[in-house]
Image 1: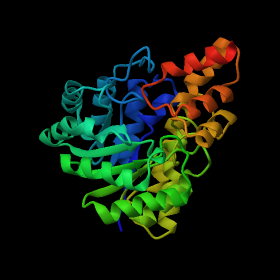
Image 2 (image 1 turned 135 degrees about the vertical axis):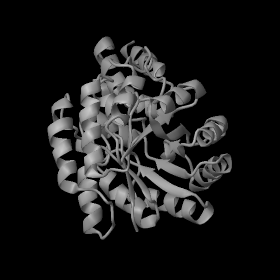
Image 3 (image 1 turned 60 degrees about the vertical axis):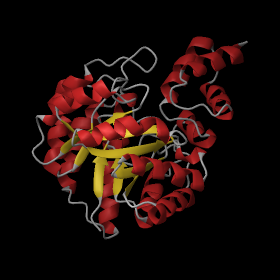
Image 4 (image 1 turned 90 degrees about the vertical axis):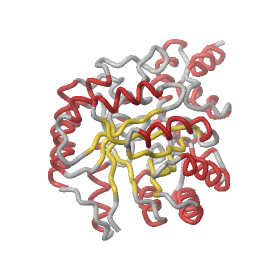
Length: 330
């Protein structure tokens, strides 16, 4: 089976570099991914189109300029974008297409696929490869994941992703969800991992073995929390397992080392904070916000994250982090 590898370094990695990618950095990374034969790679603010804001973090460079710079380097690869309804708008997606995007992944909380119907319809109307992205999939039962995936498929999604946004899943959790989707829907299935429990690679292999054909990774694991499945390592592992990726591993390694490595503000590793993300099931992009709040209120980031986990907070509730930190400080 040939797998479709989608690299998210230039989107999920935006969290890790505090949304400070430059046009030149994006251009160099895009050129390397294109040369290595990576079919799709994602470019946008970490929280998707329209994410540049005080709540989510301001981008140093307008994302449309970044998309345009990336698309200019593509002869084989195609630029994907993430759109979270309520953050990104239909107009944002139309602008992204004008800038060169060829694929959209419409992301919702795992129980809220119904808010994405118009965005998925628009993606198809614009001729984009269109996927539904079920974030925080660990928070719903297998039956609920199937129910929501069927909604995405009914709206026209060509791919449905199981997304481990908190890095909270174990391989058995992934296998159960991917296997259930394989039996229940007709469109292709994708998987997106985070490494907060150091399980991203194992979970990715489990997803592929259960039938996922679209797999996410990020070079040098650059992403929110402890990062994602490391793209170059993933390609090597999958090829050793006998899967075809169509990717030139040496060229991918060169891009990871020579382009992404120098951009990284710190090594992408499982630290205490990122471990607590996975342990408590907290959205990976909350980590930097929790660290900032901990410093501001003089409390421990782990205490904030554990409380956020108990409250079952989801993406879009970043303000709650500071409220929790303030309450702990009292």
